[in-house]
Image 1 (cartoon, helix red, strand yellow):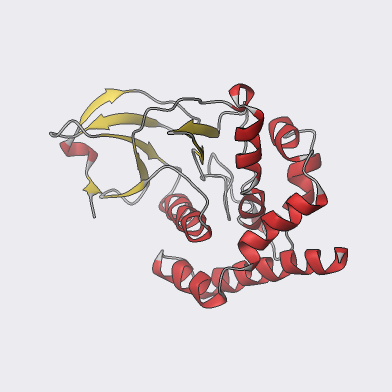
Image 2: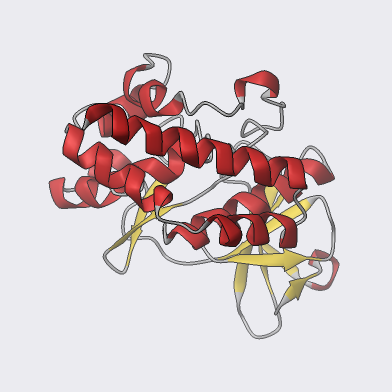
Length: 225
């Protein structure tokens, strides 16, 4: 596995999001987007969230390990679309498949402040940044008790006027679509969730919380049957 040391790379581009960052290039002309986050804990949190997205099958950019513990890096790719406003109806439907994963991981920034956290590459819809998932907000503020064992995001991501792009994307989902999105998470084996959390630097307490959140989502289906 590649481990990036930005001190040994050339910076060839600037910051694109809300965190200090840049585009870096190695000696083989491979490029990476590298963010320096508020803390080591925030960086570990994003890495862990990316592994949970991968476990669920939800497409993201490809994350790469970094030498600096407060950095997060992804392989640089050329996007065909960088904003939800340019999505076709079929691309929006593709994005909605992963609604349950966004809710499970409490990714309040799933759609992005300007609709810019969803993109398209090679015809596939990708979540471009998972820094707003789990225990931290995108810019590094802890969520505290707002990240609990109840998955209120199943409602909040579809109704919060302060998150208009998420509402525009997810509010139109039918009960059947929501159920299918929840099943994406509900079908992940508990032991695989625990293994990924612990292997990615998370605690047993966090693993228990993610299992409790999965169970809460599964109960949502049971209540509608």
